[in-house]
Image (cartoon, rainbow, N blue to C red):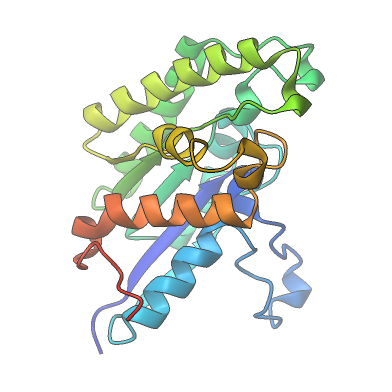
Length: 226
């Protein structure tokens, strides 16, 4: 058996996927990983590479901002000692109704992200990082504030790209994937509200993630369905 590779995913509801968080139900393996793109990645890697010893952990929590992900670093990341950590966070830092449509500044978002990554690398110096960019799709549920969402999230995307460069992380560009996909089908096919993906949208994220992280995982990078 090959050495185990532990991949931990963290972020907000897009990662969470309504996973089971009750420790008394840890025996119920049907619901531990949730039903987000993390589930799809787990299913594909586990089924196509059974000879590899991949272990998957989902620590996304719905509603989390970057400061929330940082605040639970010890419990939900450091103590679990993963080899690879994948982040997808930022949409809740955008101009939501809960904060009167005032988004966090890209500078604050980046500063908190950098503090978190610095601490992770200080305590887990061998860990490999994967940074996924947040995304937003034009959808009637976001009107009339979509322009605010688009401006805010695109500024976070730019910060995530810089972070990936500065911390030698794998960068997973997602917005362009959705933009291209929306040329084929309406945006609601991929995300029911412009923020939360449908099953189809989660599949798209999973495919993009696997393509970007293939070299890090030492897999082919293209999963054949034959």
